[in-house]
Length: 435
Image 1 (cartoon, rainbow, N blue to C red):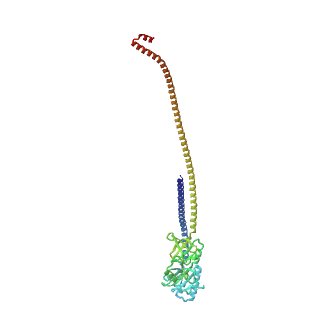
Image 2: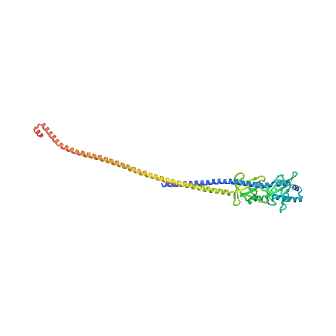
Image 3: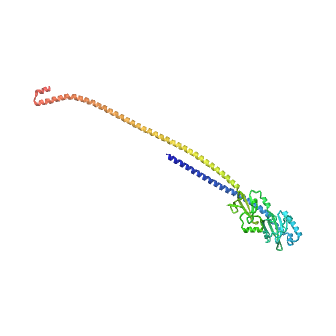
């Protein structure tokens, strides 16, 4: 019996361990599912809101560029510019054109406006009166000038080699008699655009076709590359002096998860490092890509809150189930106890009933035995009485018989004697014997 109890105890403990293991597995699965679902939902919402923000910034940037895109074309049709390119040594016209370009520059809000001849030499500029004017400098190495000399609208972003300011350049060819005499260039300062983005909750950056960041809300990312650049690309950038003497290092980006064609989750391992949801949109005319980076802190907080809620809910559910199971166990134990008590009572009743029945049977048997004994006694008594009566009768009969036999014997004896005397002829004696 002790072994049975021991085995039962071990079996119950094993069942409890298995049950708790299943509970822990269910808890882990619930948290995993909750984390995945809430993270995906939060990322989807964040991705949608960030995409809308990105579209707004792209439209703003495009608007800033388009506002000045027409200007070099308008200036290129100005006759004083054509005349000066035809007569570059006319100092009076150079001074007049410098003042004119300075006025245009102030009215339009551009950074610099200048005129270049067919060799790339600047012959007039709006900044003629500054400490570092463009007049007399040659920018033939700039792609925007090369594009303009091909009869195209030149577009280019670069760090100014003279001003050391970032700018976007529009260049338009100056035509005369189906011949390109030179190009007029308008430079837009990128710093105000970048400054207008500083209060955003996101990180924004704009990269050139080679993946070099030149506009960003994070100054530490400026002039960094999104991907390692090939040696020939670095050489091309060096020759164009696009970023002058800046060292183009690669941002330490770890790509974690792709989320569609133009979205991904990355980790930028600078300092403590942060994870970002990155979305990008192309500006085809400028050849740029605008990126919006949103930290996942909000997503992580949402997921953490969901996990805490799920854990509390699961804990409450487990406690409720445990309470229900404990209550059910108590009811079962109570029912088991009552059933056992009932069975014990029924057993005792059956035992007592059996004892009473057996006693009743024994009593009945004893009564029957007593009745039989009494009957036997009565019969024996009757037989004894009868025997006694017969004995008395026998004794009386014997006595009577004895009393009768003696005279009869005497008579028989006299008769026999008389018969014998008669036979012998003894008459006298016969008479005496009969007398």
